[in-house]
Length: 264
Length: 244
Picture 1 (cartoon, rainbow over the protein chains, first blue to last red):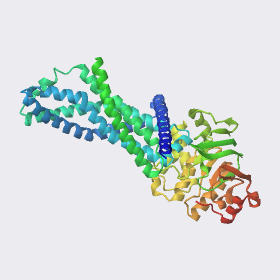
Picture 2 (cartoon, helix red, strand yellow):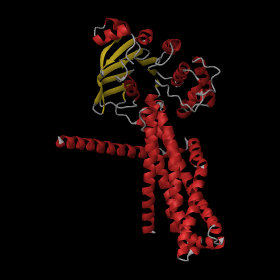
Picture 3 (spheres, helix red, strand yellow):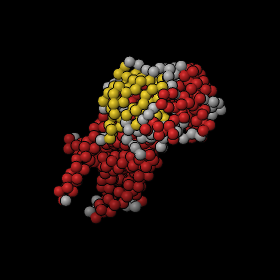
Picture 4 (cartoon, each protein chain N blue to C red):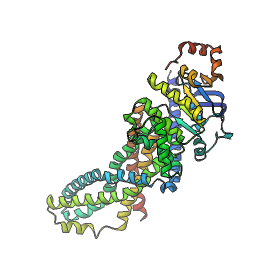
């Protein structure tokens, strides 16, 4: 009996492993086809602009809200900590490094994974189950060039200014809290920010934007294209897209920081 | 002409099609009859190259499309129009935008020509006055007619219908069937109709292939279906509508 149970478990594990590698293979081919369709950008420039509005302009409120709240919180907590060491004047520097290198891009990535990624997953998933994607193929249109490539190009373009906006908003709110909560003069705060920042800090932060753009767009779109099983299937694929892309954003955030900081 | 030669298809361990061979001649209407879930729609997708068989060949106008790359298939697919079971209309586009969508996408036609063809299809489908409506505001029969119009706007040689009357009321079904008949008589079009409704077959098809348990058990002119002795065919002839 236990031998049979172990055998069944083993067989199930092998099947799941096989399914995982097949999915990875499909995802790889999907990604290659998306990048290969970049030359069609001239044909689909209107779709790129539409997607840029969705992932760029329309995402500004959520990026601002998250950046402002985290900047303010960071200023309060780090300020309290620095006060214990009598180093409150270092608040600007520590906040700036944390926001520009890590929290600005990371929060933006997570917010866009939820907002832009979920939209991609749900929209493409609904198109998949209603056979609209098959219809595109049946009538001679490449669905990846028409639906995925514009999303990726738009994300690659728009994530950079959104990162800058997230950094700016986070620092402004930190400065505001420094002045009104910790009673630090804004001049002291900003003097600790500007002269201390070096190119490496911006490279770390801004390199994450295109990496996150690729992860969020490809993972959410792939899951949308893979949706099966009616409306419940769309829900499952959307959730899977958000969970996987958020996880990958967190992992990529760590590795980009590590690689750049070790090599610059 | 579309030809399937000894086509086999598996999804995982499940064998969907076994050694299926059938031919669809130009300017004829061929019906593929069978119960739901037997692989009828899969045959249409094979004909378009949307899925690839595990064995056998799919030949369209003398070209073997079985191993063809997706990009090469686009030119082949434009010879055929497809009407999906759920219509597959783009729900965020108006009726006229849906009709003109693929002309704008894939053919370098002047805007006047596109507008002319869209107007022609609107008139053909009897949808004057609905041009700027979204698909969701139309009835099932109207949506089906838009889907047929969208497939016809390319001026294809062959049109593939996936359950053209499924889910429609008897009046709409009759309209759709007479529209399909008129396509061959007025436009010289060939058609493949996948259906589980026997009356549809007798109303419009010149020949019929019956798919049962992944195999073609009958393939001949429609009139001869009455004489078939296979127990499954005898049972469906008495029931008229296959189990949904």
